[in-house]
Image 1 (cartoon, rainbow, N blue to C red):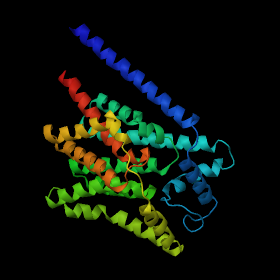
Image 2 (cartoon, rainbow, N blue to C red):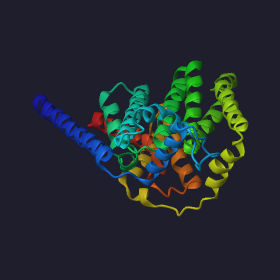
Image 3 (cartoon, rainbow, N blue to C red):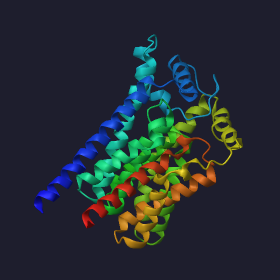
Length: 328
């Protein structure tokens, strides 16, 4: 019997190793051999303009937040005259993607120290079509996801351990996520809703929330003040919010044809009904709220719009597979 179990365990390890190798190969292939998308051209151009001292919104047209161009400044400084700039920027996105995986692992460890849980969650996240197609491209969505995941991790730390410093970091990470891309509201609103619910129930002190809001409020005032004194506040508001809200998209049903979607949504519902762990229930609520909010706000016309919900899908699918393995 022991020999049979060892063979099964070895088969699991081989399958995971092969799967991991395939995912790494695909990520590297898409990062360095696939053509440059129109969004990448847009953000590379914006980064060059920012590097040369031009002010977004006032000196050139843009309708995205500027954090990506600011953080890519050192890369432009060293490689602005090099034909390898496309590879450098995509390598930067691979680093960002690696940091996202780090926070996926950190979130997993809040629920279980099982290495298989963390490994499967990362593999499911990386192997999703959304991440494979968009996660290696030079676009602000990936930076938004990095800070968004960091914010969710520190927020869950506060829910579990009641660390004020964790809540402070969480709100600061959410602010940076919003500076990367306006679509971060899809990540922030579910967390804000659950926080409000917990605060009203007396499980999250209002004083702790107030303290955590100090730094984001201060930096928001600085951010708005900068555009005001630069004479670009009106342009910033109109291009980043008014213009984007005027866009009309056709509703996309693409994700509904994937098992990943239904396993993620079904797994979240299963956690709400059959799992006692309160923190896991909170994660499931965040998953479902993010999923349905995407339908209401953005109509999901392009696959990268689904990025905010995929870490939740990965975590939930990995949880149920490990649960099933332990039962069997």
